[in-house]
Image (cartoon, rainbow, N blue to C red):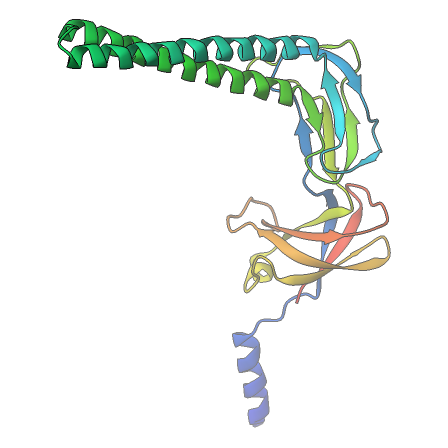
Length: 251
């Protein structure tokens, strides 16, 4: 029996363009899950949010007792003022020494001493400015602010709690991006072929379909029957939950 030539053509197309599944099973995950901590030690003065609350970017979430940080800034400011006066005085002395040297009234050694004094005063002023910048930085980071529009996922701090930053500061709050989610799927090598980061996709979750973009592709297998991980990011106005089942519709 002779096989029609059209079947050979279809077979060739299938070999060149393998068929992909239209959908893959996925799970909803949080987007931009961020653990917030202060890099400075202190005592918690206030916690302005609770788990489940929605916050806007730069909103104050938590603050340490401001007194020690304010005092450190004032001390650093005073040091800058004093070192500036010393620098200016040393600059005047160096200028006067140069004038006296030019009139052969002052020796070379005395001129060099005046210049060295000026250089030390200038270095002291720069050191004082750096200390002030550091004190202001510590004061600024003693207050936790929302890094983006977010939902507070967990609260691990209470007023009066002592925070010891050390090498690994304790997590005080956990936030996730508000209205933005990830659909994560483990897929076979055939599914990742031809996909590109940023590519438009669709995600079905909670009975609704959302426009999505491919955020990440794992090019290295992680083992298992479906070794490659896909992340699709999408926005949703209604709340979804981490671990909720979803489907990613591939192009």
